[in-house]
Image (cartoon, rainbow over all chains, first blue to last red; front, side, top):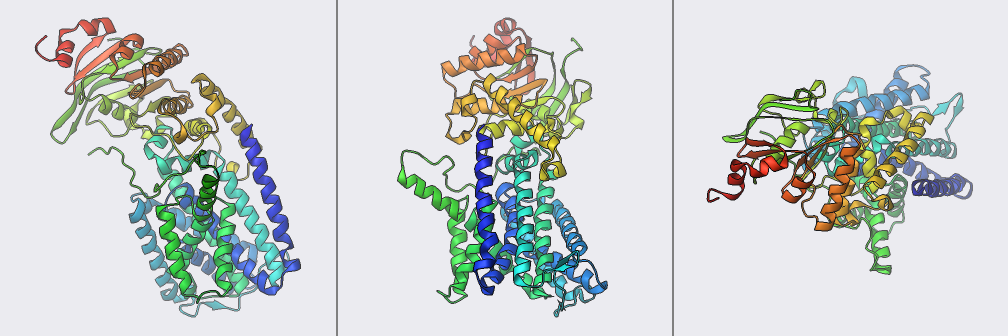
Length: 340
Length: 256
């Protein structure tokens, strides 16, 4: 019974958020809508990132590389073939990036925690160099420019407002798909192996299958976002996909909550809106991001927002210990017996 | 030896470096019985369970389960074949509710794939509904149905153990491997555990029980295998084993 109730509650919240979001372009100006588009593109990445980071517990610093691969595949196809349909480009970019993510998942099976973070970081660096060096494929340091707007069945999303609705629908599809996945057998398998691989194997979970699957999904989501991005910004160049982006993705995920699909949107929004307020010089925000990462890693494994909510709840009623309140858990080494 | 056993272990050996953890162990577990696997600390009991459940491979010997040679199949496939295990150190999933923990146990029986899960196809919904109902039934069986939506971390130790038991039962095992299920339980909880294990046996699931509590072993086991320093020193009914001089020797030393 209670699972149904929770699902109902979730659905209601989603409908409310949806209504609010779909009214944004009516009341807000162009500036806000452009910002909203940016937020939604990032939110798609974060949904995929949360799946691997929050639910599977694998750290990936390669979101920028996957975003870039998606962007280049879409841009390359559109530039090379005259009148290439956007939707086909978008799907090819998603599938291609997903495939790359799947393949990257295999070497990543061998490592855990910090070492995994380094492997993904190295992969992302290789990609960012290849984006510049593979001139024939990527257009080198100049990249591609003058790319057409996204369009489906003859309707072109060439204004910020029309693109806003397009990307909003896409985000909702992505979010619902991710939520469905998490609530399914696959989601349970992914969540179970985060804490106890031994327990998961004993229950019949094939660890390698679900880890590579999670990598593929994370990559596909970032690739999809990248493909949408190039048809919105109309250009692509290698410096867009640097390490800073991977860190931003990590911080966005941590701010909104690593095990939350709605949190993806909140995290992306907070990190895009707050610097726009002009309180601090732009560089200072990276200092704050660093602090957020440290704070979350040490004290709030679920993320900044869920952590704060938990603390507030706890302070209001100290007798009621929050059900999942605990200190450092993520990245703590999992000890398991190993045969020699 | 009776060759109709559900689990048949032939001449299994395992060395860790120079340490002979197990040497040439053979025994059977017949269907529908509770078999105790006992011995002093370091006798190789947990190693035996780890080999059966596939945590690590055996150096030599064979383990047959039903028709299949277990040592050839990867660890995660053994659940599908009907082998469930409870670990000595709890391996439950604290970030998931008790009900979800049990549903992880149903993994190998669930057919849903990536597409049916993402699209929430009717077949997947039906299966989920059935799984939830089934999981609740199992929770009822181990008397923790009221805790279905709690997180295991917030539960007392005895109840966490039951969550684990429910998780193991969720894959409808033919054989349940239990690694010291009574460790840390009080007398009352121990009696309840014995009752539950007896119920499991009546329902037709065989149990291989590694346990330090002699009281529990002697009350519920149909047969007992005794290991000492990686060798099998006795096998038989609890009464036979208890009066075996070599067993008494292993447990109490030379003086007696």
